[in-house]
Length: 329
Image 1 (tube, rainbow, N blue to C red):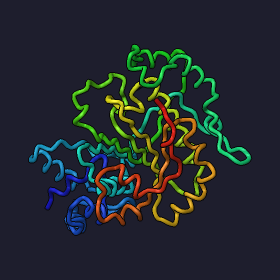
Image 2 (cartoon, helix red, strand yellow):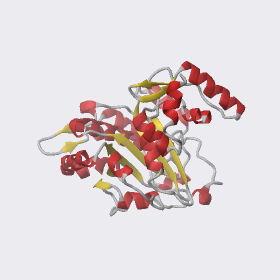
Image 3 (tube, rainbow, N blue to C red):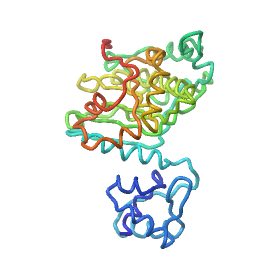
Image 4 (cartoon, rainbow, N blue to C red):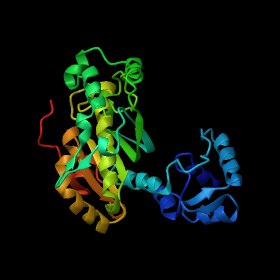
């Protein structure tokens, strides 16, 4: 019973009955942990007490499980993010591949722009102004190459990239995604291929799904975060893995997908209607890119998992903007 304490980690410090059940544990254990002083109720669900943490660490040592220290703040993944991972993991099987999830991951954004430097709203449409920013112009002049032909060119090194950032006083920042799924569907096909030294974000040979917590009451936040993802993808295609950003080692297309995530279907429909006029504007500067939506309510309703993430993408999500019909080779 007490081995279930190992679920409380630095990435998933908070649990409730639904999350425990999704993880395959008896949800009544949480009330037992509460009564024994191992857990306490917090705004984010159940968290471990000092006594519970000591017991968890002791169990981990006995079982030779490596456990990192518990976080001292709320920067680690919340209960919302934890549930999203658990629900997504049950949404599809992922045969023949590897489902690699990370919670509350921060992506490097270089150059880092925000607000009006990043996007503006015109009379009737969304305009991503980052495309004409001087720092982006400097970036593209220094690192102009992208596409599969880059595989035959000398790679950009991390040291030269950081030196360029310092020499030109380029602003750097990050974008936090509540959940990222790297879906390595054909893992066996290319698992022996050597990694790229510059692949700091570990995006080579994977379809990438960036989950963003969304609200119809804060549509500007969606515009902002998708714009910063554009800039991350710019560096991905020109610096981190040029030649492999949109096609894997065997020239199979890799998808890049934004997954806007809301609580329920009513909010999803409101969001879909509100975003519809801006669909192509959301993806045009960073093609190929998809923007789709899901909700916790919809994920909970999936009783039988799909075979692959592509089946889930096609059958169980709402599509806001698609780039399927454009050739990028």
